[in-house]
Image 1 (spheres, helix red, strand yellow):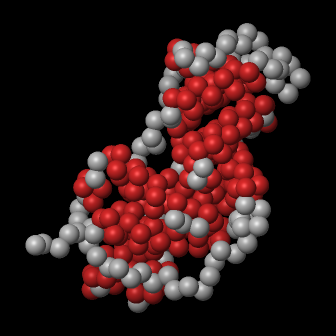
Image 2 (tube, helix red, strand yellow):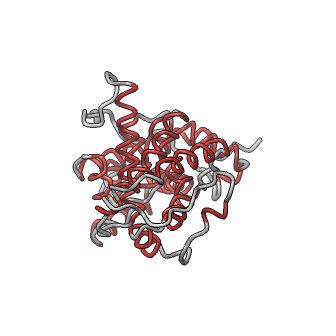
Length: 79
Length: 216
């Protein structure tokens, strides 16, 4: 296992989609490679930050236009 | 075509119009009721997902007017085609697929010569990360919520659309790789490859905001 292979398998590692042997091999590499540890850690945080970010409230004018559009169309018979 | 029974009006100013007809956590029951013609159940689904669908549309189109159109069309199409929804996936996943299709159509219309998701955005560029710096335990806590939202929006907007949409669906909307591939008409390996590159690019771009500050 080298740094290039860790990066290649990074998504699968973070998604826990690796078999045990490959996972163990990556983790062994991580114990000795600070650069790869930083990449794994900061990439995991990148995903978490986006995943945890609540969507902003819908702007009120946007919500009103959505309701008006739906009001108009939902009164038509559905195919 | 069967007319819907008793369609209560949607009052844009009346939030009670969005009250779910059944339990708040039961998407399946809401969908079932909406399929049976209960418009208030469909309204509850809209209330549940409008923010997420708007964010999805904004992240793909990068244009508020287009995102509004996409959201409206996605909800309307999902209502019109509700009878075809078989329940093999979550309603939300199905809705996301519709919204993605609408958003991609907008992008292609707006930039016909610039945007094609089918074209290989893959390049032989080296994906090996540079900028290796520690972010500390909770980098996002350094920013107020609004400022953080601005940073995240700005950074994701800098990604190529072909990467942005894959990251959005897989990591933000939490679709499976297979559902993402199906929604985008891509192969599973293409989704995986783009996801890796998107994650690494975002990591690198966020580094300038989140790296641990050097002690004075």
